[in-house]
Image (cartoon, rainbow, N blue to C red; front, side, top):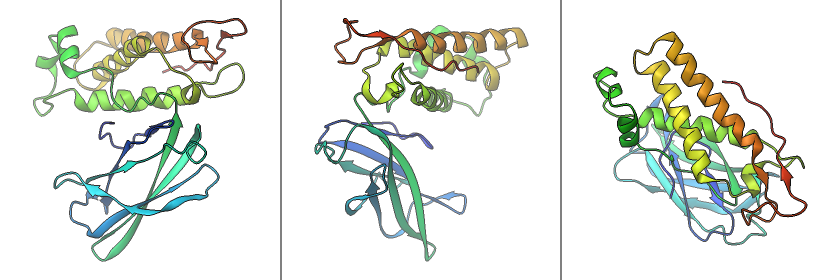
Length: 240
């Protein structure tokens, strides 16, 4: 139910009775693994109105990661939309810390990466030998790619001006290809010694595949079929 990805904007599945929200506690530039008392989380709708009251977070092991299992089945309260907010309150070193994260309520959340490190090793067997000895996996690159892909997807609007991420069931296969290109671009630029020409090639592939999203069907009833009255999306073009 979602990966523990730092600085990632999580989404809640519309109508779901169980969605796990992850929060990492940080204060003074360090992880907080032993706060004083129990941290709490308070949700707000996009208009800033509080949803219920503050509830306790649960610690994951002895880490700085905490979670709350949210019941969003009341769709009148948790309606489709962007810009929900959660206020996290905890005490560290006698000081009360307040953090805010933003959440979205969407038809099909994409909270977890679509590609694995093993797949990258299969596609690029030489890369594992080229990365720095302190880098033992591709997790950081995959998480960064997933953050960037979801950031870009949130900005695309269909021809009616509605963000596609909220209402649409997107093709996982297509998104996999795009996320793979994002990962390859990040690795080529930051982790291995690719030539400038190769780095340009990976960057161009990433931009080309993402721009293909602009050609998706605006599937208003989410039956994954182009029906009468549906059309092709006119979306923003992103350059990377």
